[in-house]
Amino acid sequence: MTTLKNRDRNVMPQGKPSFKEALKFWFKLGWISFGGTAGHINIMHEELVGQKKWISNSRFFHALNLCMLLPGPEAQQLAIYIGWQLHGKKGGLIAGILFVLPSMFILLLLSVLYVAFGNQPWMFAMFNGFKPAVISIIIVALLGIGKKALHTRLHILMCALAFICIFFFNISMFLIIIGTILLAVLIQRLWPALSANRISENDQTSSNEETFYFNKNSVARGTNTPNSKSLKQTAIFALIWLTPLLLLYFLSIDFPFWKDLSLFFTQTALFTIGGSYTVLPYVAQFSVSKLNWLSKMQMIDGFALAETTPGPLIIVVCYVGFMAAFNHFSGSILMGTIGLLITTFNTFLPSFLFIFVGGPIIEKTHGNKTIGNVLGFVTAAVVGVILNLTLFLGKDIIFPGGVALKRIDLYSLAWIMITLVLMKKFKVNVLYIIGLSLFFGLAHYYIFL
Image (cartoon, rainbow, N blue to C red; front, side, top):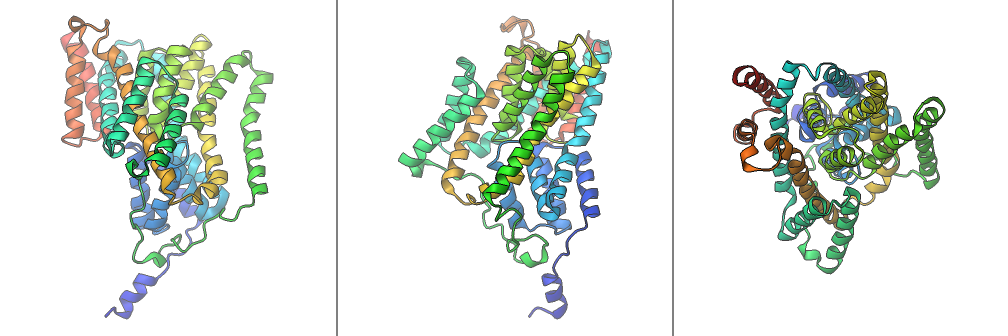
């Protein structure tokens, strides 16, 4: 029999957290959110569900599944969604902005140091140590996502088709995603039994839902939003997006460049279903090979810098914006900084739109197996795209003088293998891998060269 004391403890509802409490948490999260998307989600789950009881387990996973249906970085969108449900629009804005702001400023500082000292022997040596580790980190992500996404032979086939399309025929990421969705819908209609479900809540309902402030019985904000209000909010977001573009039109000396930069990163933000590793291959190849904004080695260095900062891995696109403007304007750090700010704005603004406007609409599709299965095929295609990214970046690291057995860089290959073993077998944190790689690069330069 449950005692009165235990019964009271079990049913005692969590009061609404103050805005100040939430502000402190979102600020802290922005500085400690290392470890990629899984790390960010784990921190939020541990603190918001396990410790603070601001949101129940079932609501947390429901929100996560909602964010995985949307384009953009799901961890940031999860923060926006929870902030919104706790304290309205201002709560969502604060949560989303503070999730990105610390990593943006850190990456700006690192980018400035990179262009200022990148040619120094010690800096060059450090990045030579970083680069093989970057490939290892991408391979670990490839294996992790592949394990979760490639459920059936059909998913493996979708992965292979995506790889063939981008590697051999250089088909754009946008067309691959659209083609995958169309093919997946066709498969779902003709052979529904062949499809596999995406992540589900798996009966994540807590036995004591009522002890959480925001639980499965709570009415979510935006549930009954009229279409007219959604259209108005969309128009406001469009105006916000246009404002910096108009300022650049009237004030900048090279508007076509700024227009291309803004449109490119807005486009990437709109088609990133599947997380950061969906958009990064597209950004890496397009900005290097077609737009010539930066070199392949600078792109790899950007991955290394991004791994040292908190926040989402997609923050690397801000470095791309910095380098694009820095190179275009003949080494201007001021223009590079503006490029970074514009890229950050265009990359992360759509997440707020998707949650505030699209969230209520997507909520209505929750539990729809067809949509979940289609997105499962999209994730499988993303694995093929990540494999292409691995080869695209790894080729110049392992074969710096061209693809030939006699030109292989044995030191880089060895460090890739060592760091892979450390991360996969011994579960060494990526920050320690970066520190070891820095030491490896310096040792290789000063001892062996």
